[in-house]
Length: 412
Ligand SMILES: Cc1cc2nc3c(=O)[nH]c(=O)nc-3n(C[C@H](O)[C@H](O)[C@H](O)COP(=O)(O)O)c2cc1C
Image 1 (spheres, rainbow, N blue to C red):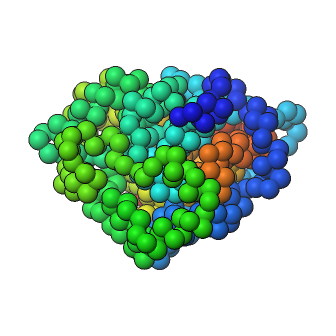
Image 2 (cartoon, rainbow, N blue to C red):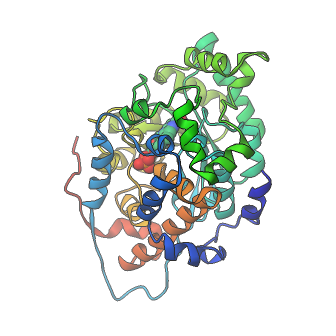
């Protein structure tokens, strides 16, 4: 946690890239996330790039996510704004400096050892939501030390023994001061990603000789691995027994964690969790309405970043129908395909209260290591201020009144 202290400083909701003295220099080299992705490709061992960048099937879902955003046009109106817009927002009673957050990810430390800590520290510094993934390397209690003001926590379904582990994680999250609990609904089955398979990524992550050779060719990665060690199932390890080695923990996790939450189970989590509850991974308005009727506070429209199955609709194409169905009764958020602040503005214009990104943050880590995540946030904020300003929206919510061409919109 020590080299995260430089990132921490104060977390004020009026954070802007101007607060990061490193931004101008980094911006000259990496002015968009595409540059980060490009650099990450050669900066990390090839298996790490395949892990962060690969999707289900032939990556068709990822490509469609990106194309869907690219196709959305916002018609600007002029003669109104004179200053850069403010982009801070309120989510579940707390102020955040922009409508962008870090999506939950399992195993980001495969991309860059220590990733969870760097993601958490950047989110705290910039005051944007950070969703710690259950199967990531970091314990929720540790994350709460690094990111006390912005910590959300994601759970998969740990169903055995009447959800004993799931409910214990909920208790720990509550004790750690997690702001929002996120239940991931969209992994009813485990799927494989061909690029990961070919790269030799396994669970638990255990580099073979070929991978070690690749690590030796990436000195920055090697140094970070030396410092942080290999990724482990931080949150789940305590339940596997004191003597369990990493293989036993992985087998335990596979056994305990399976299937999608049922509505009845979501209702039980709702009863027990006394703070805001979000369900992630919805693509149908009727499922969103069901969540609202169960008392869920927010939903994240998502196709898991194209990583589960290729043939799902893109989340941005179903977003307007879902936002209409929810009708302001819950907070509507979106992920899958966000690569820029402009994409965030498109999502907000189509009815999202906030957006999350996964891969873009991993590209930042892959290209820049510890300082990558903050640079991604800086880029996103910088770009969204430009885009909101261009369309005449002084505040994010005003983007809702622009005329939008959305060729892929799905009508239910
Ligand atoms: C490497 C990786 C691991 C992920 N692991 C999880 C996870 O453990 N839980 C979860 O709910 N979503 C997980 N996701 C999905 C993200 O939360 C998010 O839905 C997705 O990355 C958004 O799409 P984007 O990558 O295009 O931004 C993962 C995504 C990536 C890239």
